Length: 148
Image (cartoon, rainbow, N blue to C red; front, side):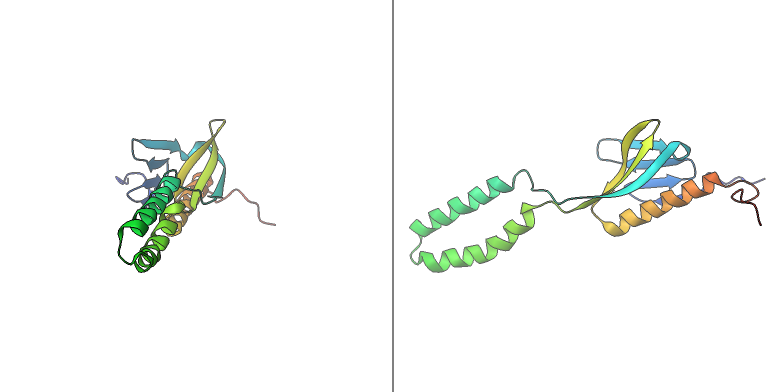
């Protein structure tokens, strides 16, 4: 008789996949789903979105350039240097990265099981969930297929 607990397919800081439960550790709380009740699991890539504070950051940059133009002795050189540095920083903060999401039907309603911007971790979690679902459907005689 084995004293081992449930089989763990993935264990990370943001998600845990066992043979019975899929748990997503979000910031305020964790959300758990029974693996046996998940249906129509699919992968979705969300488009990159503009960050909510990006327009305010752009307005601040423009005001800084205008103030620098009037206050500095050689404003053209300083403004060009400032824009050279601020341009890439602004471009980095302007858009949120694309996110990958696992969507499914759970107890009759559509849910987001997991979301991540890190493709490598997302693929590991998705693969672990796929294995947990496949192992949950197995019978003692295999997949229940007949040999011809």
